[in-house]
Length: 120
Image (cartoon, rainbow, N blue to C red; front, side, top):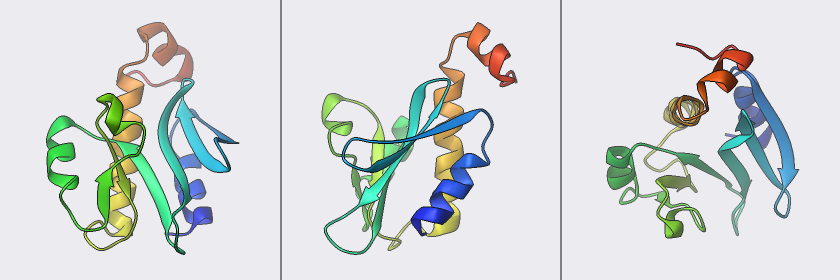
């Protein structure tokens, strides 16, 4: 996945905002809360971090091309960083990004969810 593809996909999710911060990372938010972060690894691959369920975290953290997201996971948050498509291809990454968006949106106050049109 390229940075442009990542940004296009995240822009297509409901009620999202985009900002470049933290040293050039492309950060996507819903209701002001981060659900995806992308930046460059030491190589040429785009590293994408996203929130996952506890079960997905336990599975993905052991998969080739994935690791606990730096900074976030060390603080007890269930965030994974995909650094290569070795075990999570682009289609699966898009599914995880959509799920990250959903997980974060569900934690927003109900009033915020209504204002953003995110009610289930």
